Length: 281
Image (tube, rainbow, N blue to C red):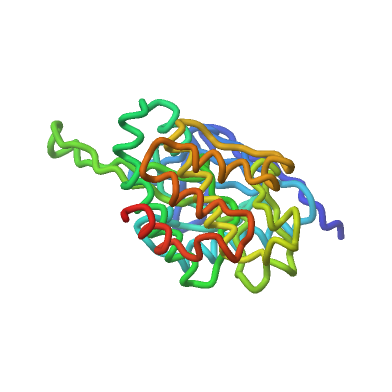
């Protein structure tokens, strides 16, 4: 029996789910390396997001990724991590249903002016570092933190009060390539070249461990200040260009970010809380 996946991704208007829970697909809202995401509506009329793992490659590998991400999301319940509602399989398509967040940090920072970004910076940093600290406390390394994977939740009860202001919360999403820290060396690290930390180019710079996430958070927060996604190729990364860029910032946060972007892992910020202490110092 072939192990390949032959299946059709959902279309708008289609109902997915199980006998206990059903969701109507409204529209496709994103395409990732391993999955497609869809805006859906549950039986209560509430918006949720369905992440459908792409029906290509070996079915066992797709199922493994689906199970791993859904297990991590179920294990990691925290206000600054996206919340999972459901996980199921329909016709060789593997789904995860998560909360609906209305935008990403990437979209937010490119729209805000410099003054507002600096005002929001400590709030964004606190939310992300609290979420990352919880991930690390559970022995997991995210490995894919960047502005496009940071989701912004804005909640208010406008049905009761039209004048109610929104409560904004920043959440870490997409644990598709996350793994337990002691397994990173065994399974490799899948990530875009523009965000690869120095130690994944040169093993002599230190081990691949949870400080990968510290480097990624440093790049992300640097992007908040600059109003853009910060990228670097292999030569720039090994030359320490991201750290140098942080050091050149005319802001009190520059030194803290520069420390999180150090090439040598031993000299990099060691934990999310240490980075938070450096930021508010």
